[in-house]
Length: 398
Image (cartoon, rainbow, N blue to C red; front, top):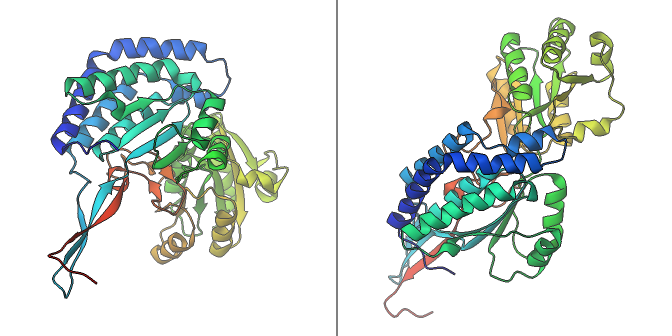
């Protein structure tokens, strides 16, 4: 395990990396264009995640500077106790050691994950997808320059340029100590890591997020939230895939038709359950299995429920454990919904697109966990630590 770097050293590396990204902005965009031209797939969401433009570089720089400004998450006392025999006992946060993140197509993760890991005193191993390899290697070059400029070993941030077979071999028999693995991507990637990993894994799972329009909803708000959740960025795990409308809503058919029209104007393919299909003149879903799907595309399913409890049950049955939102003016109904829906983030009258470490005030995230141990939702700086007990004695024996 690498010796813990002082907070001053960690912050200096983050600030230097921010400067280097600005200085190398044009080169990074050029390299990224090579990745984009090499990408032969037709996955629109993948292509959007792969792109590095000025906005994404601005966000990378902002994330690093925000991290540098945050308090040290290591060594924070969480509990203390003085034993009757005089021993002083405290529990403090501590770095994990080495973290491996396996991710697809997003070069900005190479910056954000590296920054969060380093700030929290951890060494990080980054295993990106083959589609973004040139962009990732350029960013790693900058990380190593930032470390070198502060007289710190380059292996604090390491890139594993492995194919699938090499990755599997590393997961099963790591050539160095790994304390935690975070897979960040599709269900196939997550299943692959869970199958082969020999150390703890935090799952950054699928989205498949729901909006429930309750009988007491503000319909203007509901429409805007649905449009935003579905169309503002289809390639992210906090995008919206399913809408449930309470049939107790007055003139729910009129509202449903308006939602369908507005989504279709934005080139969204809209499918409905039997009721919605009939009144909206849209294709009916062929099977209930579609309720399980995360689309990452201009596609949505709209269905009906007859009660709040039915909506809660349906969301708990089909969602990915990520995010769900209720649109209602009734705060007590909202509270009951939020307490009983089993997702990492629950909303009243707001878009699921806010489930994000930066939006939640964490200064970025390593991933968004749909596990319940050890952290649920955005994994920020404060969560990338474990804990350690410190006991100060004076010859006490038991």
